[in-house]
Length: 206
Ligand SMILES: C[S@@+](CC[C@H](N)C(=O)[O-])C[C@H]1O[C@@H](n2cnc3c(N)ncnc32)[C@H](O)[C@@H]1O
Picture 1 (tube, rainbow, N blue to C red):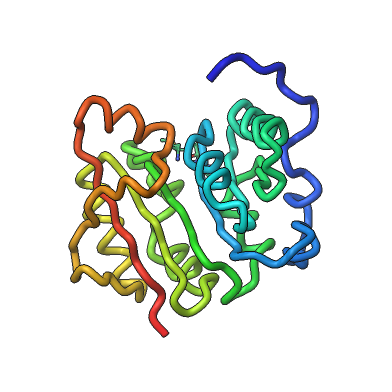
Picture 2: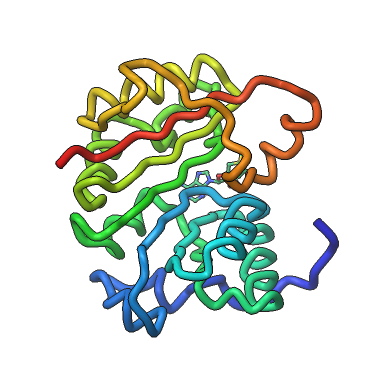
């Protein structure tokens, strides 16, 4: 990613500081499937997915200032008004901004593996937060999970299935690579090197 002078203001600050879910149709100025990404990093997936799907209303969380502000800048520069970046900790702010049964898709791609025991509590796919994320989806809503860390892939998939997500390919099964799906920034590297990527596409029953 080329150097972009960082904006002085936090990305999506007016949303991040709300204490109750906004009317997302009003935020985006239109109806549309509401999608959430946790940890968009440099934004390769968010930007390309929104370019390919101009109908979605997309909210990407990223707590690292540099990434969040650069992705927000790029979205603006490319006229992707349907991509909102929020510079905040998704674990504390997502619960304030989304009501249950309101999301169509949740994306979690290459989450930090948090190898140190002391940091494990920062993981996204802990059982309680995973059940909470299931509750945010509409019935039939999808969870898109990708990682290169086999141990975290199996653990994450098991937590998702135990939380109540349905795996259409069968319990414990990973999804094959789908060239129709935009790759994330990190995934692009693995598509070149051939390093394995574990993908799961789960569905909220009902
Ligand atoms: C390994 S990177 C992957 C980035 C991107 N999804 C990709 O595939 O290229 C994980 C990202 O999640 C972000 N992140 C981790 N925990 C987060 C949290 N609780 N809230 C917001 N962002 C988080 C990190 O700052 C980092 O940019």
